[in-house]
Length: 444
Image (cartoon, rainbow, N blue to C red; front, side, top):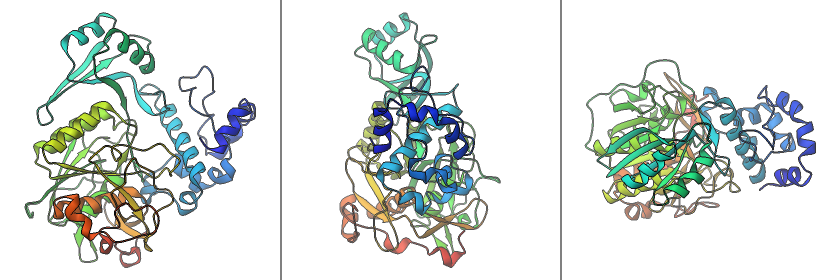
C-alpha cells in the first residue's frame, strides 16, 4: 500500500472525502470517487486526490481513462513517477471501470473488477451444482471445451446478492465446488476502444507456423498485406482496437520499412472484448483458449493482466499439457502492484520490457517469476488503418518473445539468445534487433 493510501486511511479519510469534488474536476469529469462506506465498491482504498500532482496532468488523466490515442501506452512522465504513484493510478483506473459499468461489474475482495453477481466453476460435480441451485443460484451458461477437457459453468448469484456474498454462500453449501469470481482482464498498456475501419483480412501466404493472440480485434493495415490472419469474437463480433492492431503487427506485420518478429506465421486472433472495456473476463478468455487450441496454435500471446483465477489457471495447465506455450506480459502498474496474471502462473513465459538502452522499464510489474525481456519502448507498432505509433509497455514486448519462442520451440532453446540488460530482465533480452526505430516509419 502506498504512502498516499496509508495517509488517507490513517486520517480517517476526512481530507479525501472533502476533496472529491476538486478531484473530479482534475480528472476531467470522472465524478467523485466511491465513498468508503455504503457504496458498492466501498471497500476499495481511497487515494489522496492529487497523488503528488501527477494525475492532475493530461498524461495522468489518460493513464486512468485511456483512449484510442493512447495505444502507445503510458507517457514517460507517468511511467517514471514511482511505484507508489503507479499503484494508486491502477486503483483509480479499476475504480473508474467499475463505476462506469455498474450494471455489469462490481469489485471482488481485492478491488478487482469482476462480473456483477456471477461466479464460474470448472467441471462442477452434479451434487455440488444441485446444492447451489437449491439456495437460489441459476446456471447462466454451460460450455464444454473439449480441447481443454473442461466444462465451464457460469452461475448467477441469488437475487440481490453480490458476487462477494455469493462466494461466501457457495463455499458453505457446496464446499467441493471449484468456483471463483469472473474477473475482467485489461490490456497491459494501450487502449481497448474500437478503431474505425475494417478488421484485418486473411491471405494464404504462410510458413507452417501457427501463433495465437488473445486481445482486442485487429484492424486492417498495409503491413498485414500477405499475412494470414483469422479473427473470432468471444464477446460479440470482432472489433478492431488500437492495442490489438499494435500487438498483431509486432507478430506478423511485414512491409519494406516495418516488420514483426514472426512474418509468414499464421495468426489467429481471439477478440475477448468486442469493443467493450467491461468485457475480457476469465470465462471469455477460457473459451478463446479453447478455440486457439482447436486451431493448433503452437504459442499463444496474452498481453493482458488481471488477478489470479482458478478456472483460468486450470485452462492454461490444460494447454501446457498439450504442449501449447503461453507467453504473457507482466503489466505496467509498477513493482508495488500485486503480481499480475496469467504472467505469474507456473510455466507461463512472463515478459517484461526494456528501452533502447536495454534498461528495464520502471513501470513494469513484478511477477511471481520473470523469464525474458524484449524491446518495449522507443519502438514503432502499427496504428489501425495506416501509419505507426511510438509504443511503450510490456504489452509490446510480449509478442516479440512469443514470436521468438515460436521459432525456437522452447524457452530452453530461446535462452541462449538472451543478452544482458539493466534492471530486472529475467534470463535476459531477446529479439533485441526486432525493434523498429519510430523515426524510420514516421511514428506518431
